Length: 163
Image: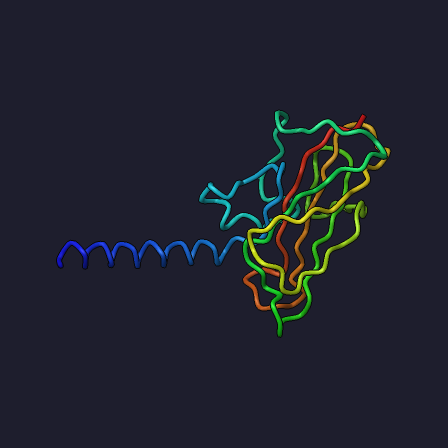
């Protein structure tokens, strides 16, 4: 019984740690610059505006101007389950490599409303790549719209090279 009790205690604390980690992460986008869900920083970095990680020249995706680019995103925490207000996931583009919190992102896809979507499922938004040749950043922003949350918004970015 001592071994069973020890395993039960270990499993309880492991489950508690998993719940605490999941309670902090909010949005993940395939192809984003990171941090990634298996990185401990993922659970604390996604509230950094405009992007939770620095750009890396090795991670730029080649895209074609005016082409449709699918963005696959998932919620890791949904702060907008009823009775909370409806949240919004928006998709923007900015030219250049030096995006900051003051950068203006132009809309490249219809916003998605967040109500009661399950977490860990992937959703796809079809973005149209602007005719701005050169380096650019696609920003995906989850605005919780005043719902109960540690932060008002969460971010992810995809670095692209437009040709």
